[in-house]
Image (cartoon, rainbow, N blue to C red; front, side, top):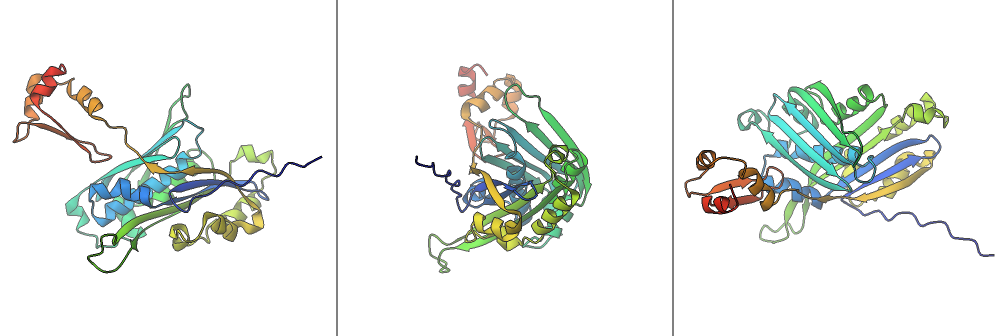
Length: 319
């Protein structure tokens, strides 16, 4: 009687992916994210200075790490508000694997930081503020939001503290952001440009649910120490496959991939949605919105798409 072959392991793209895994010997759950082209698609249109661009890149990687744990149909919103040079960060993860985000910053406060922001520069640029994580597990499920205050703290450390303090889940997170030069170094070459990259690793002890499976404190501490050996270049290098990196970090723990989620940029805006919002304003309010050309111009904060309306268009639609 023929024996069925074991199922093939999931195919893992080199980039723009989040991978959920488990260490079989210690039963710790984790996720690893790589962002490349999708990060360019989200961040580059905003034409931001280096520091807020790096901060937004990190926020998107963290949103993918946290959002990918939700069931099919779940969504996550990560929002940071602070009194620092980067005053607002928003990163959305929508099922399954869709990302969008934006940042607001104070140009004057940014002058205190040099080009090529480091991890400590980004933390300093946040100042004092709070992080809010909103979880929506899908239709019929209750929406949940948790808020955590921070003071000049790295974003990845604040997210880890959120899970440790608010959810009672021991959590380790390491994230990295950089720019990679791709193409010819001849200035006129049309394909030559700097590309944004981000990567991250997150491992968690699932607390009480793990006790029934024999998880000990030693198991968690051992895996946490192994995770802490990961280097920034390992998180960012598309030439180092996810499979190789996980084996390099956790080969003694018998690591197994459980889920692979491709990531892509998206936005929910549309001309119809913007028109519906404008239709709620009165004639006097709409008149105040007119620019020098007699048009109303609305720019989406997420994708920077511009929607232009004339007063006649809005009157015809009932605005």
